[in-house]
Image: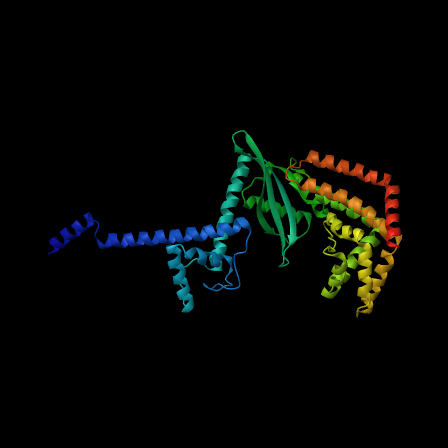
Length: 413
């Protein structure tokens, strides 16, 4: 009897009909199904990542209209994909029963894991390209996020040979790093530790790019000075746009009349944006033209606040007079009276006309510097052209005065 069973088992194994073979076949089929499900999930993650779209929603339930883009798109694909349809139905049934599947890969934790794996793979390829290029430049900038965490962004720049004989300058983002400390030595240590973690040799660094903060650009204790001691070949190049912004900011802060003018512009914007009723009063006279607040860091953005102030000053004054008749606090009425008094003066017309010309020139230079094809030579040439154009503004001073005087007579101020 034992010999008969052994021969029967041997025959089944030769014809692939044994229980072990059927079980192995079932395991392979199940593994292939999961592989296809994971491929579809990964494709959806990559789709949202390439387009910068949000993934999660308010709900994590299948069939809920507020479950976000990720689950919503998977539900849509499942209507035409039988493999994904079966998986989505199983997940929905388990959610309706309040049960939890052993694994379904649709949770927020799985989404974050997929995103982390994709980011690690992209970062790995960037580092390989950088190592093949050998020499690189590093750019670091820090800004607080909504959670009040100071995050430093690391960007690397290198020359990559995409095709034989064809070289491209690549600028790639690497990683975010938390940096709560502000001293130059702490930031320099953070940069070195981050590069060491990414296995990028700092000895091959040939350039540093930061803003003009004292802790960064300091000659003795700044980040660039500390890193240059470790690698003298890492030349420091400050941000051209930030330098241009600082020039405009320092030029304006050295003039009392300019400070008064920009302060009045910001006060007027604050008055109208404080309530919807005041904003509607302004829009009735400006017909779609909007006022803008002033940025403390981006100096060229003040052009957007000066342009409507210069072109529609009489309408803004009339709107302020109407707002003054509303039920306001004494503090608000005092601000409006001060703004009206200044805006009705010749000095206000003169400052708005002058700064409109100056900021227009600075904005054009910023746009050229921020262009992808801009080089150091182009930046120097543009800044030199800006200086000559600003000098020409002095020569055009009589013309500016004449233009402002005509506007004053026309508006009867």
